[in-house]
Length: 293
Ligand code: R5P
Image (tube, rainbow, N blue to C red; front, side, top):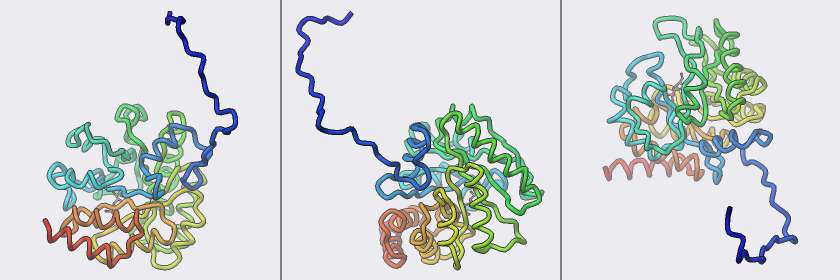
């Protein structure tokens, strides 16, 4: 029993100050539970409302991608500049030190390789693994219009159900088949389906015309995928345009880790995403850091 003697009766209740009830800063996320919001607030910076996710999960279907041959040597130096790492449990356990404090977005769908039909994925990680690994979100590929469209959608809805049980958000990654049109109409369809079926946020490619209609019609945050490597200034311009047209951040891989100077590139991307830096100024920053190193 605590000693009750000498307890001070000087409590202050601030009866004239109502308790604050804050709205949550992320689009479409105000009705989520505390744990879910807390994880999202680790992925998305509450100050800017945006995120720089570094995607390094390519090996799950295409093996040692250029730039990812040695994650320990090439990627770990980038980690301090990323808001989040998106990767597989294999790379997480084998290479990433558990002392890393950046939130993890875990790739949980898989089961196919570049040698076969890519849309034929399944859930490849138990929810217990996501809990055990203390991840902040789970990423599932969704192939709208793909051969295994329905299966990939159901993979996502299963993870949404499991994630809702434990407070872990699901990121739906829209994957576009080689022969399909990458236009606003397609991405409005794909991102909206993912959000309607419960995804907490959605990854979409950028398109030159009508991207703002994709972000406007998706009720949850959209992060922009990087896509194949393009010149650094073009990649910064694409990220800038996506952000200015309503994206809540980027989830980029090759355009960061395949850049001439990846450590400089990720810092330039950060400037575009978090500080609304123009592509030209961000490119100057890229060159300055590159020349210093
Ligand atoms: C898609 O299949 C995976 O999530 C990739 O990791 C990601 O989309 C690739 O990023 P990037 O296209 O920027 O290299």
